[in-house]
Image (cartoon, rainbow, N blue to C red; front, side, top):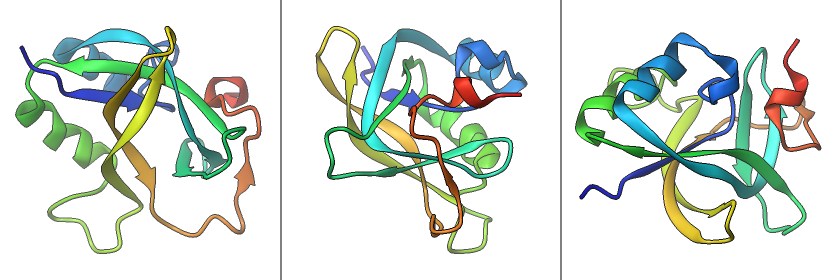
Length: 134
């Protein structure tokens, strides 16, 4: 059994019903609502997350178990504009981080971490991108 997990916190979440979410749903199983210790920023009509040392900084999202990471990651990397073919530094980097499932269990999951300076960006203190969708 494959134990590759992906934590999503923005336009890949179920409630957005985006085309990329639909692609993810075809290639992964929803595991749980989850959280990540980080800060969430509004980039444009999408968010970016960075890690935080403060346990009070919580980003809300969802965890998916990927059926075939080698198939879906290239498509997700293309969507997030990171990986081969994109100029360095890329806006996002796919990295493995610890996330907390709704039941309290900690797991390692991939997430797309924002890779540019956040000084001029709006902090979404709720930690929940869905609360900020127009």
